[in-house]
Image (cartoon, rainbow, N blue to C red; front, side):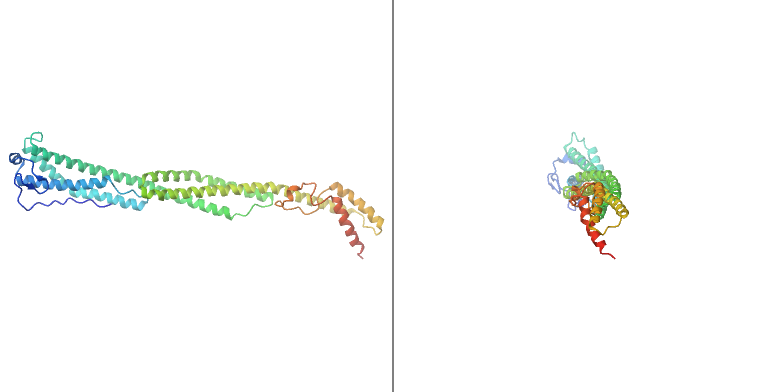
Length: 363
């Protein structure tokens, strides 16, 4: 902000103008010789008008600049500079205070020597300039006070916003990276459930940021409205980026939760299938262990094969390794059957003769 022009008053060195002559600042004196004599000497009256005209010119320029101040920044350090520049106006006004008070006192004395401003046009001219000077002076004081109050309010908003913005922005970023680095859903139901508990804890922590985020968004809205047009995009961009990061985090967390639900739905039947297979193997193993040794005669082997088919058929459990829960064949299987096997008896009829033939060749 350009510092206001100081009203430096110079006393004229030339002789005071005669009545009707052109004065230094105000053109021809619009008063008669008799009226001016009542106010004071021609030189004294001319000097007064010159000084008050200079002061008015300076005060008007300052007031005009204050009515059209520079755009308020949204950054704390720049606002501090603007506050300092605004205080300079008050400092300059204080330096002009002696001149202001002197002009007021001289003007009152000149009017007091006349018949009064309502009867003497020379006195009225002095009174009008005094009133104008006082009005502008008070206007400048009001404008500087209002400007400082506004700058202080905006600075508080800016300080709160940029300080409050840091924590949630960092937390959102760190949480997003953490979720991205997590292991994929497990196969064991207990592991998946543990992952779901961890995801629920993360959800509660994320939701705990909502109040803090709402505060930041509110501050951003207030600062965007209070600062000048050049700085509004800075505020809006910062808030938009925070909103986008929050939306991305919410989506990432939800996708993770959905995948864990799907994994658990697949892991439970998969584990049940594995357990059923292990149970079948135990039963089948016990059954095979209790059978008599494989005979050497063809008829005996045939009979033993027929005996083997019955318990296999009753068990009707798939002896093949359980497929992965992500396998497309898994969803077409049930606990009691397997699409890859026609029946347990077909497995027995295929596997047992081969095993018998291998056994018959043993010593």
